[in-house]
Amino acid sequence: MESNAKYFPQTSAALQSLKETAALLDEAASESVAKNNELNDKLTTLRQQINEKVSRIDSVIETLSKAVK
Image (cartoon, rainbow, N blue to C red; front, side):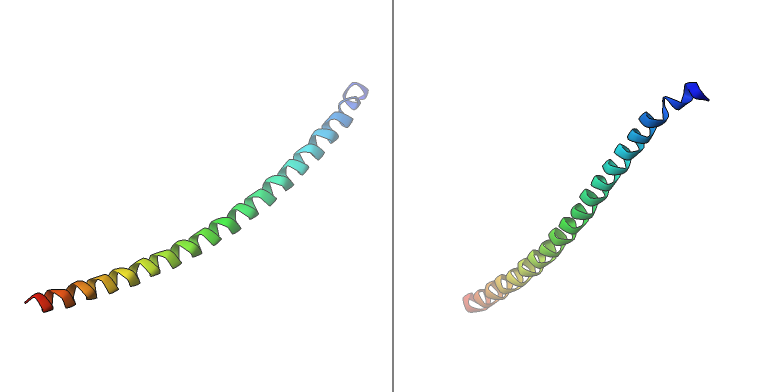
């Protein structure tokens, strides 16, 4: 057991380092999820704006087509 005791401080330090790394990864993942949600919201808004503009353009084209006839 004494021969293994010399590894305990190293194992403890490695576990502490792993915990710190896991905490950093968890924080980064949370930030990534938040950023992804923000980008999805912006994408939804842009799609809505595009759809509105397409509808307006279609309306203008239809009006012009009637005027030509």
